[in-house]
Length: 118
Image (cartoon, rainbow, N blue to C red; front, side):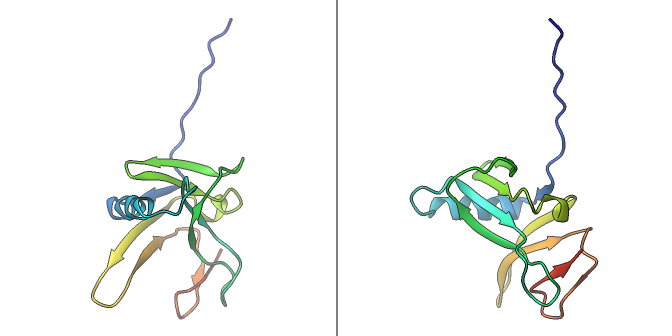
């Protein structure tokens, strides 16, 4: 019987240590039944796509799964192509707090920063 070789591939999105800490914080206070946190890119905003991070209660067949020290992070299967090579960070200052994305696939963004286009 031939040996089956599996090839690992890099995650579609790189989470910074700050993003991993935030995933852990979210999972500590997650609602019952939540198995992780999921990133998706729903159509909205003036540029077309937006970043959305929500709790997820079940795995979907084509979602990308990234296991972090503080919990499981999923990327919506339909959104992976828009996000490949991106970095996700969590940033806080005196006035704002939120996930920040460096996405090499984004060709532009709206003025308010709410949405992007590919």
